[in-house]
Image 1 (cartoon, rainbow, N blue to C red):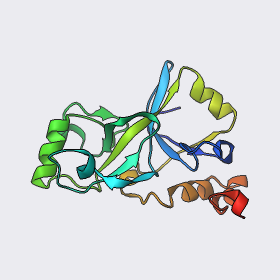
Image 2 (image 1 turned 120 degrees about the vertical axis):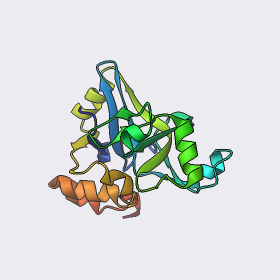
Image 3 (image 1 turned 90 degrees about the horizontal axis):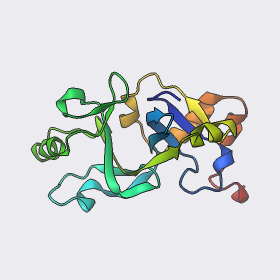
Amino acid sequence: MKTGKLLVATPVVLGDPNFHRAVVLMVDHKTSGSLGFILNKKLEYTLNEVMEGIDSEFPLFFGGPVDPDSLFYIHSYGSEIPKSIPISNNLFWNGDFDVITKRIRSGKLSSDKIRFFLGYSGWGEGQLEEELSQKSWEPFDVKSQTELIKRPSVTMWQECMTALGGKYVMWSNAPENPRFN
């Protein structure tokens, strides 16, 4: 699994509330394990509600069930944020949080270029490969990774399922809970 790819949850993960209809951006993949952030699960509160000294109302997203009290972020600022970890040529994760807070306070941080997460999605050695073989996830390529930050989270899963085509088109139009059909 390459860094920067998306994983789209298939109906196989229907019973898992953490990953139901999730679209995960893979930010790190090694033989020892993998790490990603769920892009399409927006939380009901904003960054200023969980961080002291922050006045801006940046949206927060549920990145995954691992370490849910920790803040993570992806951005397209690159070397402007020291210690950022490259995902691709134009997309990075984390970096010097002092620089982030200074940019927030000065109004030099745009929600079109950064997305904040509480928690992350993690897989141990061989776990992701096993889930891929069980078809719990479908890998998905995106043309512009920086557009992922701007993209509305509400329709992301349906759009990915439709783009995957075949049997997934039917699932893209299924109700949130198939029992209500």
